[in-house]
Image (cartoon, rainbow over all chains, first blue to last red; front, side):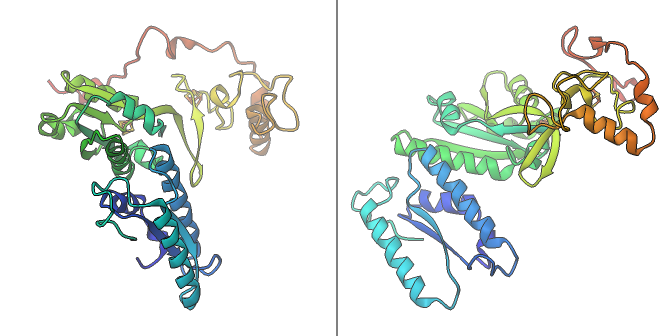
Length: 107
Length: 223
Ligand code: SF4
Ligand code: SF4
């Protein structure tokens, strides 16, 4: 996606329907958006999807929004590690039929 | 436009709990603009219900379609084939659209996904406010373009009442006193003298009186 502001609620929901164990959306640092408020909009959309996921009993922990700049390779690695650990703890996507979660993944 | 808001997903799920295949119908009219029942919201709701039902081990099949308007018969004809194979129809239109679907598809279980709230408009992105109470006899020419029927908590025609304080209505400090707004606007327009004319009690027979109202334009009727 060219900007986290273009993230659509449906993309996240469909990723989970298709078996993703976790989804993280990476936006630029706040105040640094090339399109002014794209990353703020993206974050709010992720918050909205979290609300839906809680409401329907799927749980909101499997999706997260992170702010980081393209130059922060180390921070990116930290986030990936943090998210992977979180998902490992949560286990496979409850929508996937195989309990060992082999079909899942992080989108 | 008509402003509506989606019901909690759990409430909608309960209405179709015994259905296996459901058609979700959005509306490209008012409810698209107020972000409650357009194409996007329709697909989000369908996806949410698919996930919910899968978690409950009762998977549901969904079909989605967004009509140009649900409140015009010609735009819901397109659903004729789609409804054949579904157990229920969830309408994401206002209450008008839901009723049009229920009337056309008499043997189908048609349920509302939205609560129809009021008619109004946006004050900023994501915020909508009620502006008209559909009284059937508009008096905006007497009140500087500010509706005393819906924006005044008491709907009074000769305001303000004694509860108006510092420009706010006595029901809440967050609600503007419509009559203060009317007074300010009429002052700015140099038409304060018009407010000195006492308005007689409103004729409510043009409003919710005598059952559902009808509007007819014989010159455009065909056949
Ligand atoms: S069905 Fe309701 S929401 Fe859709 S266009 Fe008609 S009045 Fe507006
Ligand atoms: S006076 Fe009546 S028609 Fe006019 S805006 Fe108010 S409620 Fe609507």
